[in-house]
Length: 491
Ligand SMILES: NC(=O)C1=CN([C@@H]2O[C@H](COP(=O)(O)OP(=O)(O)OC[C@H]3O[C@@H](n4cnc5c(N)ncnc54)[C@H](O)[C@@H]3O)[C@@H](O)[C@H]2O)[C@H](O)CC1
Ligand SMILES: [K+]
Image 1 (tube, rainbow, N blue to C red):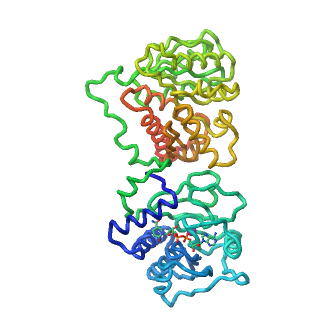
Image 2 (cartoon, rainbow, N blue to C red; image 1 turned 60 degrees about the vertical axis):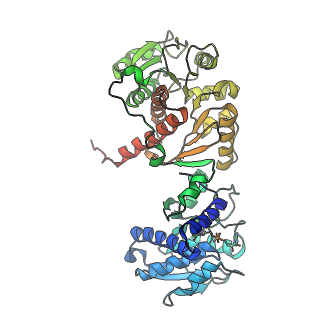
Image 3 (cartoon, helix red, strand yellow; image 1 turned 135 degrees about the vertical axis):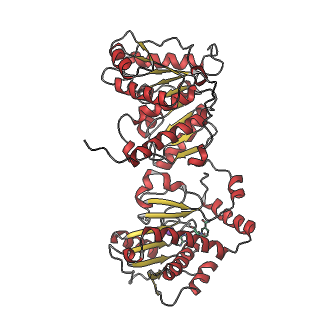
């Protein structure tokens, strides 16, 4: 799914109206209906009590007025407060005229901010994608008043005061919503950790916006949902054999961290790799062979860490990092691997795909390796701290995305920045945010499992690098989501 800018969203509205012969009032009605449908499923009339709708002067406020009417018709007890402005949008005026008289309407002023209790349900329809500048004056005072009340807030389209895709100073005032109900496509702002407390849980409702327009729109931002990965994984042909799916090499483990190698290896096998060989330090040989009997194992001559790179000829992909440790000898192995994988004399028919993670990235960051030499044609997946070690400290989440994008473009590699919405940057400058996964996965070993899964998919020559990476990240999160759905086993 594409993530569009506020400007593109306005064009999308126009295109939808033209294509479907709709008036703007009708499109607003669709948005309000979608919001109300969500609202009614969230809280019934009794649970909601009195619902206060705060309306700004634009179409976001118009959505709020239309929703107030529809909720009133569904039996909710409604109250509306209007933010004064010199002019109001035409569709706002239409919906103001059609607001049932039974709904109490008040105009907000500095000395008389609406009464909001902690149990009040508030629909925030002050500003949406038309926000043109930071909130100030009465609007800012109102939003501060709302936030201080700690009420249950549902923001329409986007929390008022938050820009859809632009960075903004943290001191800017914005609504802190419990839920944000948006239309058509998600906003970039929803996917960034720094906005999590404002956006709350977000929901994107389909209001039938123009598919052809969305398909033609260009955007560097994408949201990987089930539809995006559907059909990516090639079927396993009946006459396939283990060679069909590739032979992967995993370089992992050090004393005390052989578990990381085991986790990555198991994930690689479950990811469907044809053959897996793991190179582990001498101390890990017995542990590994016992824990992962399906894999082959090469013991490194050093007991506690990896010190030698094995022959690479047999492999279609190499993964390095899980539990690798920080020994200089292991950094030397990593350097040899990077050199061998990129050297023109390499025997492979295609550049040897690498999956670089965890301690391997820390090694690169600690030694400030020239990133071009290390990352070219490879896939790396750091978490934010690891990424900063590879680049520079980010001013905020938007800046981090810029750094990520620039890094992937400059060094022509796929880079996955791990987080709640892990972001995969491509050499073409696209950013793909993953939709799956849950906080239960924020635990040691999750990253090792992802490395193993990505390694399996990269070893399968039938998948293109980007497709393999996007699918691996999606499937990893989905596995976590399925696990979270299972009832916990009590011992
Ligand atoms: N396809 C859709 O997603 C649909 C969205 N709809 C809703 O329309 C809004 C966008 O409406 P728009 O009129 O463009 O903008 P706003 O309502 O956000 O605000 C514009 C209004 O506010 C003034 N203004 C802007 N910034 C400030 C500020 N900082 N302080 C004070 N005043 C400000 C500006 O001058 C205008 O007067 C979208 O979010 C959806 O909620 C449609 O309903 C249908 C489809
Ligand atoms: K809003």
